[in-house]
Length: 68
Image 1: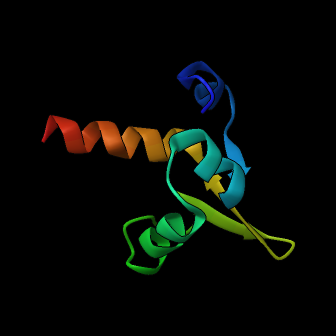
Image 2: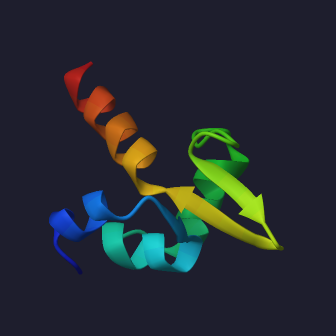
């Protein structure tokens, strides 16, 4: 797994790259999207047939969950 510093330097990455960087499977990320835990056009976008995840928004959401 890559360091968190790399994660914060990137913004939009493919689902596959996101899975590699944060330690979840592609299927787990897809499940979060399907369940609505990741919001379209905020946490993820579809562009040219591929889904991209906003790592910064994902990490901010995780931080908010830990504060709650």
